[in-house]
Length: 388
Image (cartoon, rainbow, N blue to C red):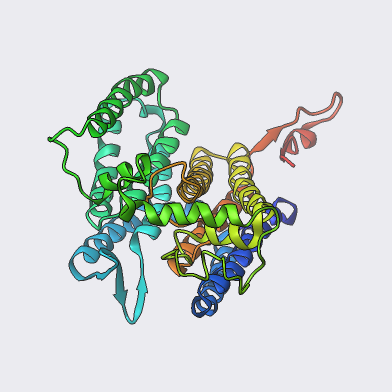
C-alpha cells in the first residue's frame, strides 16, 4: 500500500495551486454568504488531509477495490432517489449518520478510478465490441441515476470525462469518427426542432433554459439569473469593487444572484475581484488540469495515465462549463466551479482526486539508459532510472 517515494517526484506545484484556488474560493464565499465560510474552511482542512494521505497510498492498491467503489457509489445514488433530501426542486443530497453529502460528486471520482482499472485490464481488447458495450452499460447505470435526481450538468460532465478516458485508453479513431457522425447530426436536428417549436419536444425546465439562453427577453423568469451574472462580472471592470464591499450598485449585495456561493461564485468573483481576479482563477484551474495531464504523460502504466487524464479533463471541462454559464456563453446548467464553489463533498472529492494524481506522479515510468562502453554487468543493473 505504501512505497518508498522520492521527494523530488512529489508535485508540490499541483498541491499549491489547489490550495491557493480553494483559499480564494473561501474568501469569495465569505463575501457572498458569510455563514458558509467556516464550513468551507472545515472542508478545506479535511480536503488537504485526504489529499496528503491519498498521495502516499499506491494508486494500484486503490484500483483493486474499484468494483466495491462502483457498486457502493451506485447504491448511494439509488439511495438518494429513495431517501434523499429535496433542495431547490432537486434530490441530490443524502444524510447518513448526521452528515449530508452529494453522492454524484463522489461518483465522478469513483468512475474515473473504475474505468481506469477497467480499460487497463482490457487494454489489448479495447476496440472489441463486448468491451465497448459492457463499458457503456456500466456507464449508463450511474448516469441514469444521476439524471433522475435530476442533475443534467453532472450527467454531461461525467459522460465527457468517460469519453476522454476511453479515447486515452486507445479507442480506434474509426470508432470515434463513426460516433461523431451519428451524434453531431442528431444534436443539430434536436436544436433545429427546438428552435422551430416542434410539438414533439417536451418543454421541461432544461429546454426552457436553452430557449432562455437563445431568447432571454422572451423567457425572463429563466434568463434573469444568467443576465444578472453577466452584469455582475461586467460591473467589476479591471480590479473589482473589493471583497465584502457595501456598494449600493452591487448585484451581489442586492441579492440578485441566487446560489451565489455555489453555481455563480465566478460572478461574485468577477464583481469583487474584477477581470484581473477572474484571470487568476481561470489560469489556476487551467494550471491544475495541465499538471494532471503532465503527470499522465509520465505515468508508469496505463491505469495511472487514465486516472490523471480523467481528473485533468474533469477539472478543465467542469471549470469551462461553469464559467461559460456565468458569462452567458452556454445555457444555465447549474454546476459548481472546482475548488472555488461552496460544497464540502465537491471540495473534498477534488482534493482526493488530486492526491491520487500526485501518487501517480510519485511513480513515474522508468527510462532505459544504455550502459557505457566498457562497463560490466553492474552498469546494466543500474541502467533503468526514474525520469526526472
